[in-house]
Image (cartoon, rainbow, N blue to C red; front, side, top):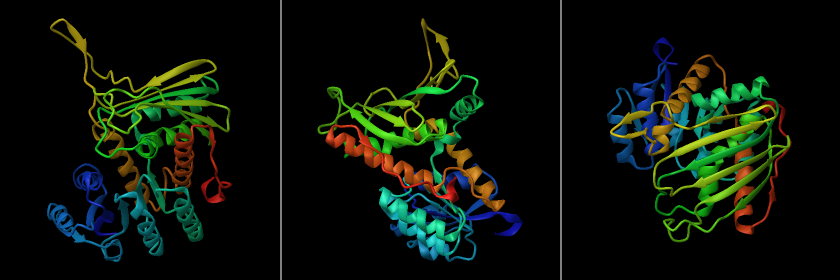
Amino acid sequence: MTQRGTLGVAVIGTGRMGADHVRRISEVISGARVAAVVDVDAERAKNVAAGVEGCTAYTEPDAAMAAADVDAVLIASPGPAHESALLAAFERDLPVLCEKPLTPDAASALRVLEAEQRLGHRRVQVGFMRRYDAEYVKLKALLDSGQLGRPLMLHNRHRNASSPPGFTDAMLINDSVVHEMDVTRWLLGQEITAVTVLRPTPSGVAPEGLADPQFVVLETDGGALVDVEIFVNCGFGYQVQAEAVCERGTARIGDGHAMVTNAAGRWGGTIAQDFVERFEEAYDREVQAWVDATRRGEVTGPSIWDGYAAAAVCEAGVRAQTEGRRTEVELIERPALYR
């Protein structure tokens, strides 16, 4: 590590997420600096690097990882590029924070999992940031305490104001519901065993060719039922809510009522307009936790197993979508490294 133990980070990918992480490491969190940025668009990489003192721009991940001042890697490039970057990091035994998806499919995720197993120790934290959201952390602690008894059902709502151009039915699962799939596994401590996708008549404002909204039902190996309303063209904002129904009570998060105003004959508040606004503090805590753990020589947070399991559940979800039937999730036995 560089002087005073500051972690030198190479950020791979300088699009929206990557650039936001560069800002976060440079201006928000402590204990790290952006030593390098990587992007296939050389000009974009240079422009981002120019705003950070001592940062070098690269077009190839390998070159950045080989730099003397790089101690760790944050991967924020498109999903198809993750596998090669992860394998390159493993060759140098570098710690990694990898934005979701770990990889775009279960087969490639399994290859990465097997490569990390060959190292004999964890090197990767996967970027499922909801695990660092204050409300989700409180809900997790409450469920783990047993105060409400065993969780029976989990109701989720995931709404976006509008979907970007080219958004597809498969992306509803792979880009959106994947978050509920991960928090279900984390909150309940159970694996998802089957997925069913139901579709109402599409909204009149849904883009042509997109069946929006959809209703996803997840079954777990602990006997819980989980539903997810995914509605990416709701029109009014970004909204993520969850309610756990347990044997002796319920608990709900995501109502967004941190401040309610009363004025001019009306009462109300505001609704976040995108995921960056809603989960900004969760991203900050996620990256800070990764930096702190890395400086201690540890790896914490969501593992490659969690990334692989999410990919497998997504594949079952897309099959359930396209085939219109309940689809079982195919998982290998969980390796000892991830227990």
